[in-house]
Image (cartoon, rainbow, N blue to C red):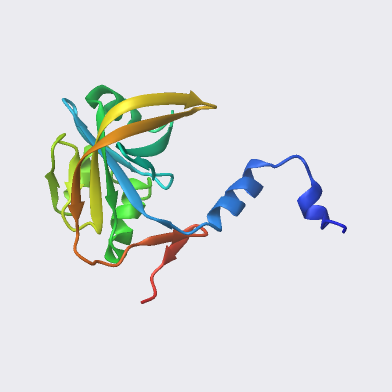
Length: 170
């Protein structure tokens, strides 16, 4: 059997990698933390669970992400799963638009669970974590947190990120 030429190239350039990753539909997640300097957050499309016993979550954070220092200093983070109608919030926390840093929290209704990390009260759901471990790989810090609180947004539809945009159909 002959493989198509595009599958045999051993070198994967970053653009090809991101195009391939873009074909994976993911829920839009805003990762948040709160330190003495205030709240910080970013759009974290790599958030996932590690295991259920004990309940652990993982998110990878580029070392250039401004919110990384807040997560590390606070030793906590929250994963906020955005509802379908929150594309503007996702874009804002993804770095689009003029709002930066704590200004991003002016949009939406925010509360907290156990750690003090901001929780979007209109989220599909949220998971509050205490930082347990960090792993550094190739310019990225992988943070693993133990779940200490959960929030259920009671049946809201999620905002799905796909191929650089959002799936907004019913």
